[in-house]
Length: 356
Image (cartoon, rainbow, N blue to C red):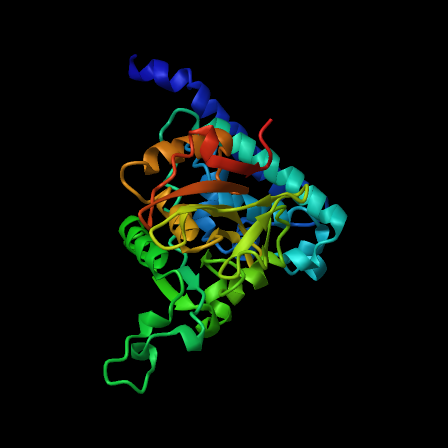
């Protein structure tokens, strides 16, 4: 194809990008007649640079925003209270009314669909664990109860090892290395929930472990609408079981072992949402009934042999990978978690939004 043809007859993908750009510009200029929302005003509200807004609205060289930025757009334009007294502000989840949440969700779906069309078949989707906005990334872990910590976890010991305090350390180390590799210019750190401060919750937050040991998981899940619950269960005293919306329990499996029973299949949970503390960033939860379930939830998108296949499946089910949850089987072989293949139906207990 000659250059003149490619310029005068833009591809379907290019036209789709223009549609998205025009919609973003219309939201800014037409949502509230009489209220002036300039590019700098919007940029300040959702936490990006002005050139980013300009590139996303450009019809000559449109750039599709990251999916989580569209969630910030949806939150901002869901309510005129975002511009109270002419001062821009991104309202938190607990500040929105039910009607405003519905409007936010409607806008979010619309914009993500436009973005999916804009990126169709271009191969431009970044990896699940890649955050090109370079916002801080924090892995927040639970802490092993003091009585169960080895003696080297005592800071008074000359051989003190701080990491021995961390619950789900296998999953944390696996994910930390991967996040550093795919976000080489970002501030990626890990912390205990008990050591976290408010600033740790303002970027991309990854919660490792369930409500039993990770108080941050309990705190965040009380602030988002997630249909899958995790609760303590007397029959599983060392873990917490998952409860589906219809009340069914999803349980791990045990089999005969030389002494008693051994875990043969754990349950893992992977969740991706907008961060309720900063809608411009993401919240990810990697949890499990036991530690192998947590590790399986992490490794399904970090382990080299299956991560691309699993990412492809998630992309087909949840095109923008912004608002979903998947409850998975995590096989355990001789005590070792085996990375689940999410494209195999048997390995998926439950998906939200529910499969059609």
